[in-house]
Length: 472
Image 1: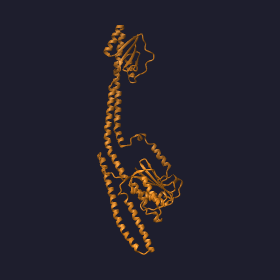
Image 2: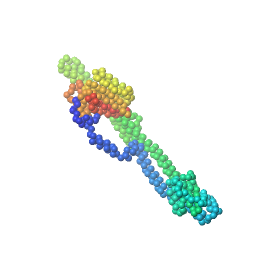
Image 3: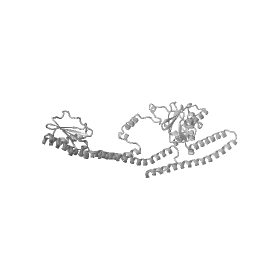
């Protein structure tokens, strides 16, 4: 291929792409990633998640605003009026006891209040409110009721909302005793609060479920289109794909089908054309071989025979490149077995090839095309190096294959050019060794036909490393 060019200190930090790494650029990219808004990082990435977020966000905002307005206006006003009503009843009982003293009057007042107000009141003469009030039980009821009692009673009082489960105890200090009142919590609590919240949450949940079902049905055709495009990009057939979904999604699916048909028709036309070219070229080559066989063994005839064999080799190489894998269907195979088989063939030719492979490596590939690709890479490495090492391993949803050699390698500036058809790094090299310049082109054509990628880098063995990444 060519010899390694001298490396500068900066070249030692080059990546597999062959371009020197810029630490400043790398740090700027890291800072840009770190500087992204945390809101963007928290947002869903899928179309379904973002669509639901568009629907749910206004719904939640409306519910919060509605709940806040309801709490601030309706609930507080209703609770305040209920507290004022209870405080008024207690103030009336205390005023009657003060105005009409006497045991008989007190009994009549307390009994009457129980019948008409529903308050269970007791008057304990001679007692005084304790110096330490009871702890606050309800953060919602205590402040509102305390404010109402202060406005209407104008006497010392204590509220205990935690002593009883269904009642509230109010103790009022009178002139010669303590008035104890037990009131039901229902007189201070409006049950519609829970009903409104329940209806808000319930209707929101139902709407969210309905929106999720509808949005999922709209997103599914897009996911099917993406899956079909991915399968087609990997070189696999998608015969059962049909347009579905909204009008725009159907238009995209129809455009994809038309594009797929055009590509398949182009491949088919190329294959048919090359079959004719193959027939037309091989006929005169065969005739020329027969004519050379009838000539005498002269130096000119030997040179002509060499040119003829080189021409035939170039035609075969070109046809193999242009034909590709158009006529082959992908199949599930053990990639480790295929690599080992190709390495075994290379050893028979005298190459020193070492392999590091897993026990099994299942993959769906075009067997003939992949064999041709691996054969080209291993033979090419063996041609320019003494030792070749082939390694394969699974990486998540992909397979990585590396071919290393200890040869002269390829200069970084020429690594992209070697994938061009009929390109040679050193045109003066012997054609018997350098080939016709289609090996790397054919390899990349096969790899990309499987939806993968191929790249070149420096090998730990001192030569060239060819890396192939294939999706599973």
